Length: 131
Figure 1 (cartoon, rainbow, N blue to C red):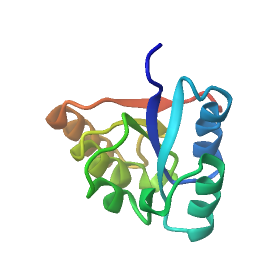
Figure 2: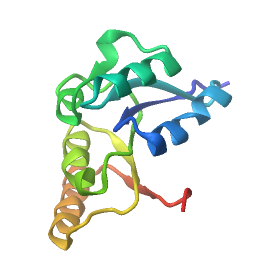
Figure 3: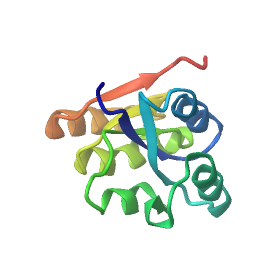
Figure 4: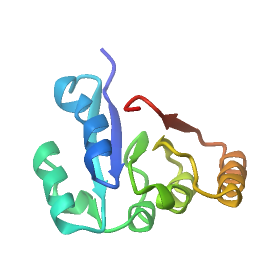
């Protein structure tokens, strides 16, 4: 048996928690090991759902990216206009990212994200499954 994938949640709202709920049904395949969200009650909710210690809870994607990478990928469910700004530090920190749609709200941001993906060699997968 292989170890489960480990993921962090960035933006602990409805969509990210829905994607992350796979870990509760299939703990042998996925474990949620961290959360980043500026709202304390959302961090607390994710911590309760996934049994996360205080040391794995962060106020921002930047704060999460500032510590050594401890997951295989990130689930980014932030607000649409924050998708690129929260994904960039994750890519730089070595995370692959499952990014909720839309990819970006401005074409300039899309070009910035594409350049970051190419520059870091990381992957960004766009989630359309809740559409």
